[in-house]
Length: 198
Image (cartoon, rainbow, N blue to C red; front, side, top):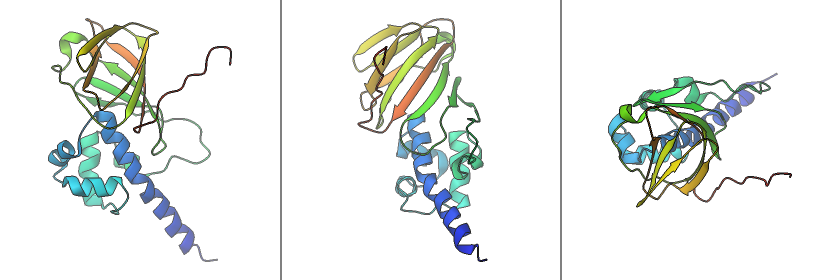
């Protein structure tokens, strides 16, 4: 029995999933293509073509991308184990921030548990913009949320959603870490919560 076609199809499926994963990782960090180009030494055009699936990734391109995103190379290329419903959590630490990806599928809405460091240890407030839509729920602590010209304080059990093209910043509001559950989706995708009792 010839399994060559099956192996080629499987490899093509894995490579097809790399672009959406790369885009989701970059957007979750709030990084622009230009900023990622500076980090990796790849051009913004190459990064865009990789994310859109118009360019087949090479090892030389994936290695600096894995380093920049702070994830193992396996996370960029390997499809999730089939038949295993467990989510294998691998925290990503960057500038005092800890992000735990809760979803492994490429594209669509991505879920993260995010832990922001205490206010005194957080990076300087710097508003970011990027494509997408975000919803977050405060699991613990107090959150300082800056959106455009407005500033909000959120406590445990409170939630917010916003268009990430609006300049924004999220961080702990006091001397304790703040824990959030965050959902991030492409532009136009919003979080929809069913009313209680449904």
